[in-house]
Image 1 (tube, rainbow, N blue to C red):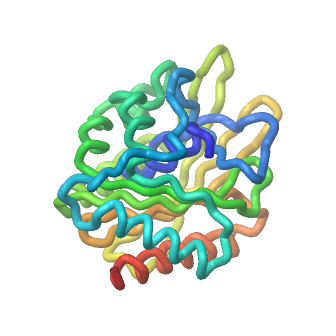
Image 2: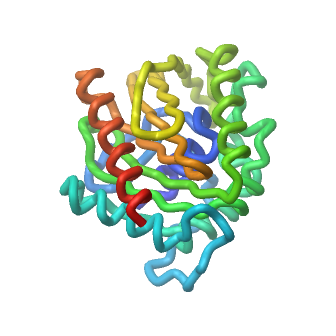
Image 3: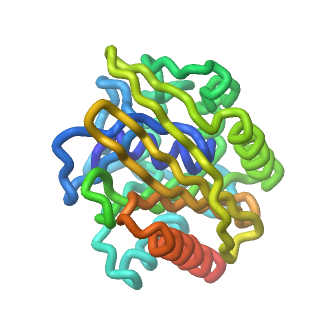
Length: 254
């Protein structure tokens, strides 16, 4: 599983609308990827991570992993799961801003500018699963981030909604390449207490990459699904909503 995809999935789970970058080259459907560039020095997860009991949150790391495992088996996704213990060193290495080195214009559209990402990582238990989807440019993902206080999760959601009203379109520049991202809210309903869905279209020189992100809030836990466009927006939305609901069912049964 590539570090870039892990960072992007956790960014979305914690900051909801952020962490969108440009399309990658040489797509490989068997390896997890994402459009969010990561620092070159970020380590890959260890194959045998040290035991980690996690922080005091609504769900423990082993419960999040178990939920993803159950969804993986029930949906026959053949996904790859990164546990909290595997993700933690990657996210700690990324620091306060996993998008360091990327210039976002206008500046107010940088979702991580005002979000203390490292503190959010420190206060949440995490798990991410990546699996093949309908897009040849990126895999799909299901990520879980569980915190102790539901108020902070709801505040993040409202901040993302407010930001979307001002940042429906913005540019990212990385190593001389300029990429345009267009983000629109999508109407969606899940079994969660609150649902937030966005469609992102990333325009690069030779590539257009579209993805759908559906986020459900369950108490103090964020469930996020990102699916790459299959060419059928309704089918993509149904797939994303179904996976959010599947994760909710497994968490509620934990």
